[in-house]
Image 1 (cartoon, rainbow, N blue to C red):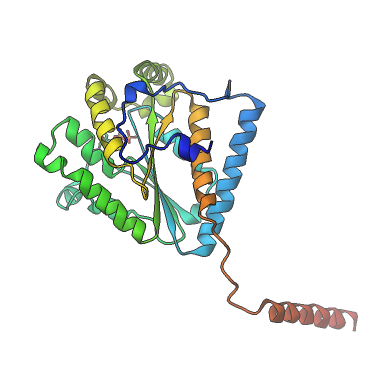
Image 2 (tube, rainbow, N blue to C red):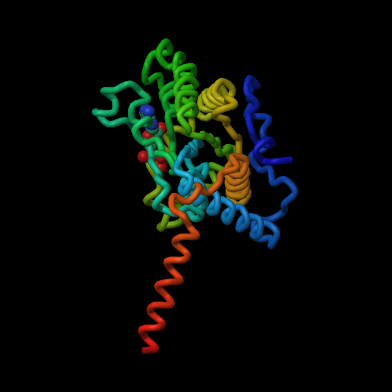
Length: 285
Ligand code: ADP
């Protein structure tokens, strides 16, 4: 079964995160296995080929949204996916607490500006879903406002999709024990201290409230044109494998093609041969 199907939230289904195993590894055993390493490499190569095609085609683009709790692995996933991408055709944008200027606009304004132009891939580290996640959990705006946003997000994504932006959204699913384990590793490793923000520990008591908020977003906003995928992410290697496999499966399904040449190749080839033979004649003379 394609991972594109296996981990996709079916439109209209009701997500219950307590039923999703964050430690799922499918048929694989260990990240160090040769088979896993080989598959990771295969998906990276496929993504690389497909991104090249998308850039060459220059007609459509891809938006990849990454969401997850603190320490779920958004940065690690971006590192992995980016290793397949030519930086000329790819951007990464992280979204933090809105600046004064951003907050003065409608909530979708800042996300719209970061959308990929034709032929490009854009990766969002956090996304417009923050406006129904952290905002909902902490009542940053009244319920009357955030509750309308699910429909507004669906309409926004439909408009983007109708304009040639393909959208894939990934929720990186870890369980509470794994998060604590990762927090501990950060504390124990001086090279990771910079990653710790007070926000990390502040959000922990809201675990259940976030689960509810994620379940609502995943259930209400997984559509045919902008699907959500729930990625078991306790194992970093499995998370990377699943995300890169879904992206490559999806891009291949687009059946992208190199555009027709804008010049007469036979004529150019003839010119090339003329140059070579003239230069040879001159060198021999
Ligand atoms: P990282 O993304 O690496 O965790 P930070 O530690 O700076 O970066 O966290 C960014 C913070 O910004 C998060 O706590 C997130 O919930 C918050 N944030 C993002 N978007 C919004 C938003 N629209 N409204 C309020 N807070 C937001």
